[in-house]
Length: 309
Image (tube, rainbow, N blue to C red; front, side, top):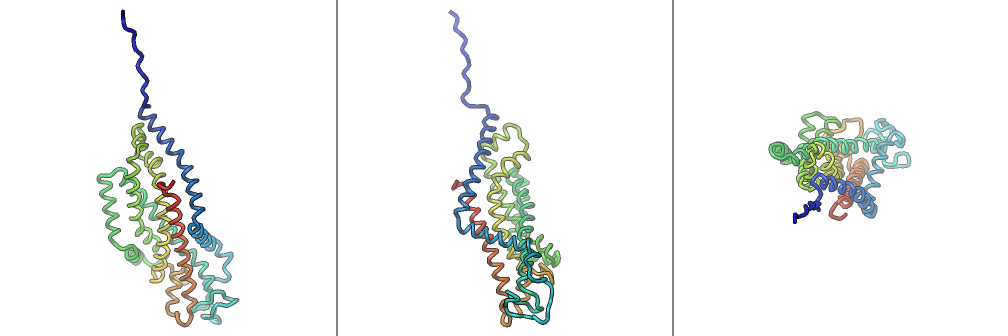
């Protein structure tokens, strides 16, 4: 009696392309839930909320400077030279009779612009280089890593001062110098994150279904690299504000008569005993703004940490 033909059993494991697509879809579905948990965790962190409030206040002051400034920041008055804080001039006046409060309000524009723009330069240059180095490896990684190591071998502020002196004294050149000096940090961070993410199963699956390297980097690696990049950027803004103040203090940043907190401290150093308010208020502004960005960065780091979500 002839044996009946047997029906081949259906494989229990889905084909690789289907499994890869399902894994990528599941990973994408988890991202909104992680964001919601991160926002709730950030809102429960009082220090982070305080930092966000300080940063938001500083940004509003900078944006609304023409509306809230009581005086022209560069208008001089030799009848009110180095006057102490009063009802007429809340923070006093400087050596040329200019209102310190007005100069601080407009100085917030220079300091925040230097922090945000310089970090933007560092992110725009550093993150793509780091992603390429981490994803492709080999000679690309060797060239990018050696360049980053060479820049990291020079202290951050020393490199910024040297570049600003080479480019010339101006706020724009100071931002470029700070951005290039901070760029290696983002190269190393993006490279390390790319090395970790590219070994995940959903990235291997994306390669298996024939996605291009560009699409894999943009769609699967970059979203997973963004959280630590955002945290590093918020912390680096604080460093950039201090760097801009240092460059302006040395005469390599914002040029007179336009105000910045660093240039105000440079002027105030000659009048510490006669007019201490000239240095106290800009120093407090730098301290609070840097503190706000540091608290904000620490809160973002805790909220976006995938190990705690």
